[in-house]
Length: 203
Image (cartoon, rainbow, N blue to C red; front, side):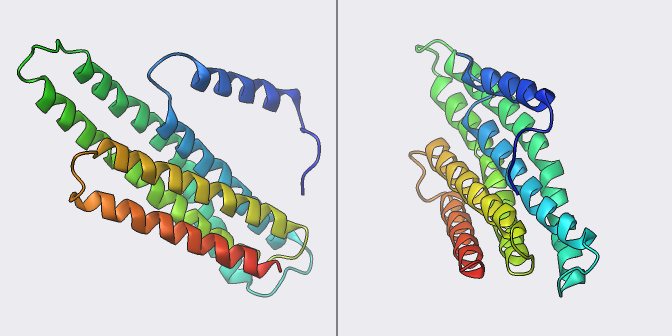
């Protein structure tokens, strides 16, 4: 649907958020950014479904669109929580890294903090993969130009899922046999499959 910003408040809010992420502080960082990208993606999918349902003559699959809208709304609501959770667990990693290098417990504390931190990007990857699937379903049901909203949401969600999956692998470096590494790869592939279905729906 596109178009100019509805209000300067949107630009001001976005500038503040981007400045916080760009700041030379440990958090918010990549995980929070991936979570917020997932939230933006979910919002676009939700919008596509909501607008389609609001038409006087909505497309076929009304019940499916309603379900997809609810799924996207749930992901949109969850995304800011995940962003906060990621910032909080990463602070624990930083605290562990600040321990003296001659502290015999340092390596164990850092590894434990990173292992705990991996849980949040894994949850982000899963949420974002779910958004790609909801968006693919929406893209197959809505009419142009709403398909653009749905597909844009799917593309954002795939990027969020892949980014979060990469963070899991980084957090668990040295532990390639950890089941969460394989799970992260599965979620990234799910997101890619959702993107492929969405692109196919608008061809």
